[in-house]
Structure formats: structure tokens, C-alpha cells
Image (cartoon, rainbow over all chains, first blue to last red; front, side, top):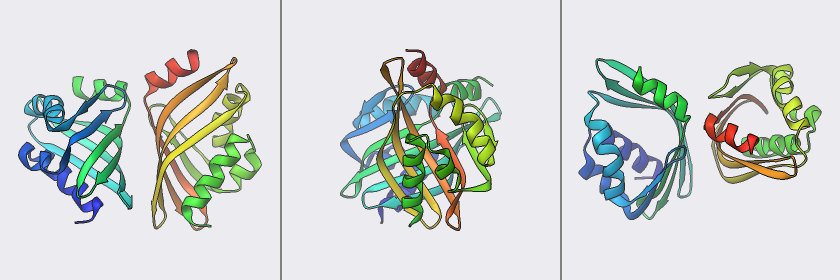
Amino acid sequence: MTPGEIVTTFIRALERKDFDSACSLITDDCEYDNVPFAKVYGPDGLRGVLEPFLANCGGVDWVIHRQVEAGPVVMNERTDRFEMGGRWAELPVAGLFVLRGDKIALWRDYFDQGQFTKAVSG
Amino acid sequence: MTPGEIVTTFIRALERKDFDSACSLITDDCEYDNVPFAKVYGPDGLRGVLEPFLANCGGVDWVIHRQVEAGPVVMNERTDRFEMGGRWAELPVAGLFVLRGDKIALWRDYFDQGQFTKAVSG
């Protein structure tokens, strides 16, 4: 797989809440940085942030509008959609991924905290 | 110039507050979207947002950490630095640019409004 295909596979695993598959695609020291919030590290860090959050969602649908890659760097523009309480919350996101070998070593998502809060609170 | 080189040239022009050069690199209907704020269109829209803001800055230094391109799409990760009142404000940004021919037709910057407000207010 190319770095871009690895990133797409990773996102599709998260949509299925398949954390075992997702975590098999990141390095043990992977930095996961939600820019307006905080950074966490490694599979445990990623699970700690996303498992409880996605557990509160019905469907998870992260639409990749555009994705470009060069060497180990992948960037994409997404609308991350979360089904919560019977409606779909939507968040505009730009993501940066840097691979080391065939695993993701950095995942940094740029978005607006206010838009996130508004989206998930309805 | 490649699309990426056009984007870099555009950003360097804005750093110099050279709006004539910057506007020569965008389409007449260019969409300039600051995601947490609003969209404006064309050279007049871009000037209306950025000229008064940059006039309040001493130095303008937009550091491009990573930039990737594919076809007409360019994405970059930046720290946009603005010298205001004798100090440098810094904003983490992810930018998307889509070209039409040799001009930028879409410029969309993803960042956190709270980080922007905090940065420029000191």
C-alpha cells in the first residue's frame, strides 16, 4: 500500500470502530495531535481518546474530499460525520499524516474547537 | 511553475504585503475560506480581509512545514506568524489550495478560532 492507501485504510477501520486494525497501522510512539485540544501517544493514547467518543456514536462516516501525498507525508481534507442521538454531527477537518515505514507515526488534525463543540452538542 | 510553486510564490507575496503580486495569482472568482470565520471571493474579497489585518502587523512570516501536491491540489501545514505590538503571534494552520490553470481558485485555511483570538490578543 502507498502511504495514502494506508491512511485511507486506517480511517476506514476507525469508521468501523475496529481499533485493533487501526492500531496495527500506527507506530508504538505515534503522536496523535488534535490541535485545539491535546496530543496523545501510541495505541493506548489513541484508544483513550477515540474509543469512548466513538462508543457514543451510531454511525461514523469520515468523508475524504481530497487527499494528496508525497513521500511519507499525506494530507487530506475531510468532513468527519458522527451519528449522535439520531442526528449526524459534521466537522470540517484537515489532517496531516506522516508515516515511518508502513505505519503512521504522526496524525495531526486541524479543526475549530468551537465548530466541534457546536456539532456534538447539537 | 508547478501548483506548489505557485502557492509558495503566493504566500511569499502576502508576507511582503505585495497584494498586486498575490492577486495576480488568484482567479477573479477565487474562493478564500477561513473555515471558522467566513468566505470571501476574488481579489477584492482577499484584499478586504487581509490588507487591514496585515497593515497592523510589522513582520509577516508564514512558515511552511510541509507541502504536498497532486494535480491541481496543494495542501500545506504552516505556522503563520504575525508581528504585532512588538511580539510575534503564532497560529497553527493547515491550508488547501486548488488551482484552475496557473491560478489559485480555492484557498481554504483550517485553524482554531480560539487559538487565533488568543494569539492576536496576546
